[in-house]
Image 1 (cartoon, rainbow, N blue to C red):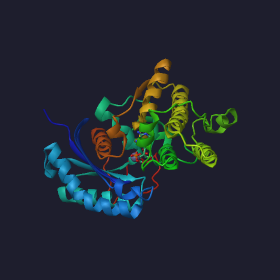
Image 2: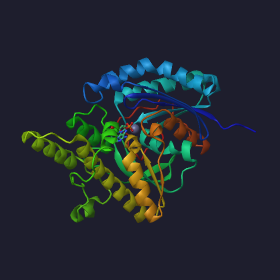
Image 3: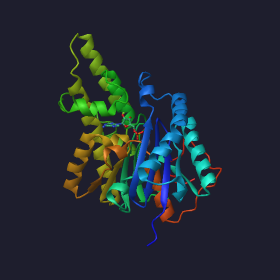
Image 4: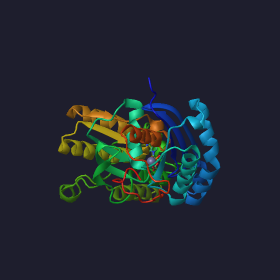
Amino acid sequence: MKQEPLVLGIETSCDETGVGIVRGHTLLADAVASSVEEHARFGGVVPEVASRAHLEAMVPTIERACDTAGIALRDVDAIAVTNGPGLAGALLVGVAAAKALALGLGKPIYGVNHLAAHIAVDQLEHGALPEPCLALLVSGGHSSLLKVTDVTAGVEPLGATIDDAAGEAFDKVARLLGLPFPGGPHIDRVAREGSSVYVDFPRGLTARRDLERHRFDFSFSGLKTAVARWVEARERAGEPVPVSDVAASFQEAVCDVLVRKALDAAASQGIEDLLIGGGVAANSRLRAMAEERASRLGIRVRVPRPGLCTDNGAMVAALGSEMVARGRTPSPLDLPADSSLPVTSVLA
Ligand code: KG4
Ligand code: ZN
């Protein structure tokens, strides 16, 4: 029997150098080198530092992925690479490496959208995506609700954040609470010891008047400001800030809005499958709340395991593998990196 094609995927859109290798829906290797510690003291990712780190990590990460998968580079049938959106310099390193591999090996290259890859990765864990499905994509740079009919052909945006992304809100609030960067996993951890009803923080764009124009859009900057004011008031009064309680209450507000709007969007489209992807999908409260509320509505929820939610190369390989399986035309070898690539553009 002929084996399914072997696809190597490269991800460098932010601070993770990811190289994944898949065959069909089977994950063979997922090597990630992160420069997150180099950015921590700046409280955010520094683009120049990230680009340099990608350059240094690229070859060793490719070698590590091949070793883990037990393959040689010449066995690879196709190369996939994130060509946007993301940090321009960081993307360029991945795209240049992918082009060099494709040219050297004489194999096709697929330049793919990072956001669509966050969706496609779930196939490695839970098999073929239901079509259509509703995707809630929540990361450090994006928060969107998307209707996905065919992840290789395009996705239809239903709504998105009008200001901060969900992950960005987690990171900023963590900073206010004196937690390290990136803040999402730390808020998730300390919130387990806190009360989610300690402070009733605002739920952005859920008031009746907002729903007319922004039914499926998100806004997290008001919530971030509300947390800042609350913390400042406590500090001014000379009282201690109950970090776990504030973290839990903030997390509850974010998850409540994300889940409420995602389920409303699914119901409005008559879709019975909700997929959650992106770094914030690693959040334990978001996962539990989505499961609980969706099951009441008869909606199925799919969320990849946390390690596949944050940026990695396997997700790019997964989308590349789907491009090959569906016979999509490979990208030209001069494909550009596009830092503001729209989510509707899935393949270069
Ligand atoms: O998808 P991702 O790795 O990179 C981007 O494409 O942005 O997402 C990173 C974001 C960060 O803001 C990080 O704080 C957040 O995902 N994140 C989390 C958790 N793990 C990562 N947010 C909440 N809870 C988590 N457990
Ligand atoms: Zn991402």
